Image (cartoon, rainbow, N blue to C red; front, side):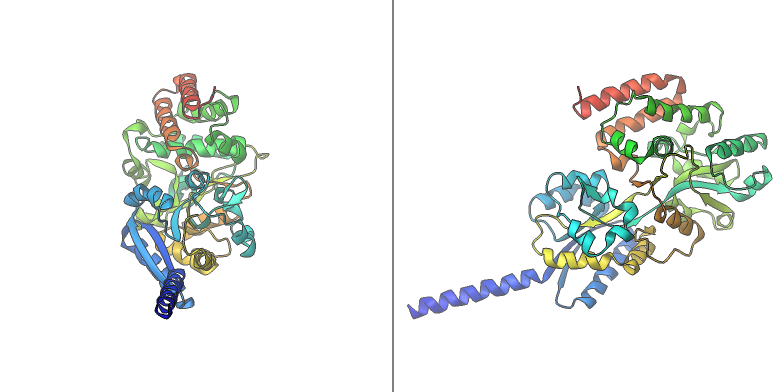
Length: 412
């Protein structure tokens, strides 16, 4: 009996010891692209370990495309304690299935409502927060300062009328106003996003992205009609569907086109001699009554609902949610810090993008193909290419998109 008692006691102590060890191990799965992205995440984990020596970190770095394939399996079986992912619909997809931890209390406790105000909506599903934003990047209009000056454009257009006036001056000077690489359909989606956000606002935009509004709605047609005006006036480069992003950028570099609507991530690829001559400004206001919203695709970190060490996972999120760490990740990931209290980037275009997103009052959209289901996004972007090819088919395109919406979202 005594031997049995000792054996049972030893087994209990072993289970207790294993439980303590497991509780002090934080499993973190990180998606990355390139050595520099992996390095900045590793450095962040090292800093957390230094500040929390009682926590052992077990990190798994997975290349981004493989990560996308493996993530659903992790979340539904043996989940890690922390993952990185994307905000918006991509986050909501898993939150709606109960696979992500509710972080609403973390938002209150750490006062994230204030420093992450512009990305709170994108971090939320049905009024609860399931994500901590880490970095994002801005979308806006890049332009050639010298070309503007030569064409007699006094300053960066702030309104739609000023933008159209600038386009007319550029055309008169023999310069195409906009370069766009429509073969990459997502570059067209940027135009749709901004016209919709400026004409109808982010609340409407998100309802459309969620499949709640018909594509035959007059407000959707209004977006395409404004776009058609730009096409009819030949403000875009000829044969834009023949060029991808890399093929369209030389029009800007060579001064054959004056502007390009794109994310700040392209700035690092500008030729050194040209970089100082490139400017960047916020997409102009079309309707002053509409709260100004922006595209700011955000990366984020989450705690899976099946995580084993949620205590330390919450500690890790609080650590990453500080201004200094957000700034560090942004620099290493080639993006902007999502924390509005982070130091402003020193590079001029990044600084402008940071200011635009930090001061946005009308909300931050996650970009067309991150704000809606993939199937509908694919149909929508194919429709945009068809519209660019022949703007006269606008009604046909919208009717086809409406049929796709009914099928995909099971609408009657």
